[in-house]
Image (cartoon, rainbow over the protein chains, first blue to last red):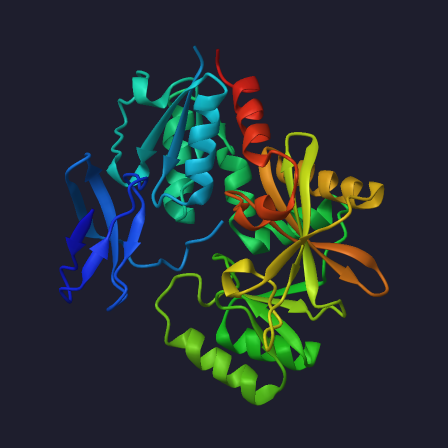
Length: 57
Length: 286
């Protein structure tokens, strides 16, 4: 599935097995998008949260 | 049927692997975005999404900690518990708990202002290592080699509005090989142990900064120290990180609460996600 980067217009490829919650990174501008919903035909994404200082494992 | 809920805020390899493993073993699994949740003081009824046990895999320490507290107050079992999460997410608390429980750990000094940090470094001498007390993946971890680097670090901390930036955590620089050891503990079992080698021109061994993994032999001495560290912080599903000091042997420097295991799973034969599922099933409320 293909989407257009909302920031730079580049083409984003969404892997078939991707899941809601996964992050897709634009290959051109590096913006991260989070998949918020997905069906066989459609995928909705929003800009992902930026890395927080308390992020980790 | 036992239902296991995985709470995440950014879906990684690990959450996907555990989610599919739970289903393959014949149990029900749900993935819940922690960012979408709301609670209130009246929250007491069980939300069916949370099932019989919650596996907290949130990447933001503060978000995960507070979500865990809300869930525990509703009477849900959460892995890892609030208490364990609180200890492991904060390096200062972890170091003190490890020491108190006689787990070998590097000597670490804490300071609570720019002035006391400057004085501390002068007294400790160089080189030394400074780490943020909260955070991961080697971010903000520096080797301070001399006083000019120390001043640069202090300047950068002063420019940071983060409430933890004025809490300083200084650790002795350990004379070790260019690797550390990551052990994954599930309950009372060490299910994986790997060396993490630092990449070229990098002293940190984190996989996030290019470190590569190789299987590490699990000796009885290593197993004993790792389990001791896990028990010291309260136990659960944890990643224990150790260094090999040339004179003192193993030193535990970190215990991770939402352990990543992608690197370990590529070299270890053990079924890490499967062992996690078994532990969650065993500790569920059903």
